[in-house]
Image 1 (cartoon, rainbow, N blue to C red):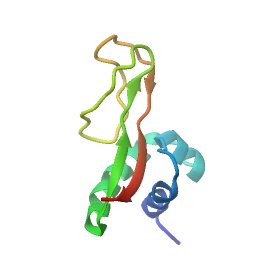
Image 2: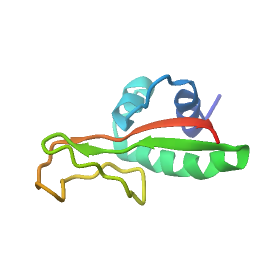
Image 3: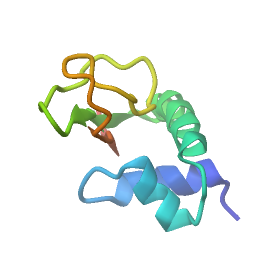
Image 4: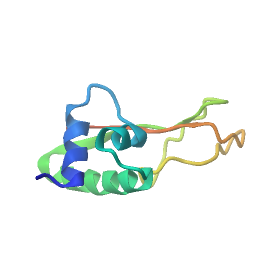
Length: 98
């Protein structure tokens, strides 16, 4: 039986388009996105050893289209620094070969 992180990694490797934390929650039946974000941070470090990388489609503001380029972790931002809107389009994730 694979662990939750192994299942998430498997879905991110097989996905044709970037999956958000909410997509992963829906697929695995999880209730908290924060767990998925923590797992993706861990998975990003783990897959490097296998010659792969987590590709991030950055979060952006739904109001002014500001793109959050530099993120220290996988978590979605809560507010746009440009227009202060809370309408944030979540980041998407994929795992691909380097």
